[in-house]
Length: 116
Picture (cartoon, helix red, strand yellow):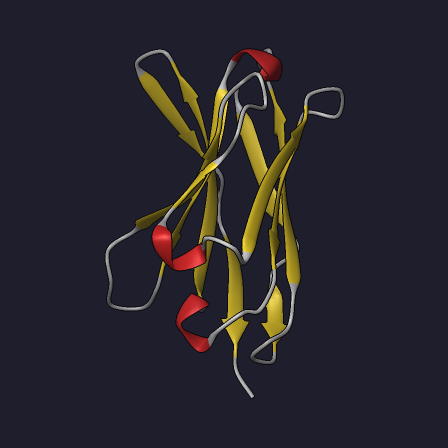
């Protein structure tokens, strides 16, 4: 059974930083790409970042480029999302996902709130 568990969300002031983590279990983690989506209140879920199984250069949505950095540790079955210079518009529930062949697995989400 595939499980993805996010952690690291919370409340932060504008300009602050948070680091999200996602721990995977139940399959051979190193074979699959991983990513992050987010969903703000009243909005559709949107893509944030993605990294391939081989830890190639991550891809990001334009609104987070230069501020967010995604990485993975295949030895620990984890991916991370370092979020710097946070803005109120980054407020959302952040979900990590694992892209398998023909199927996508999701975590339960972690809340990030950017507010003064």
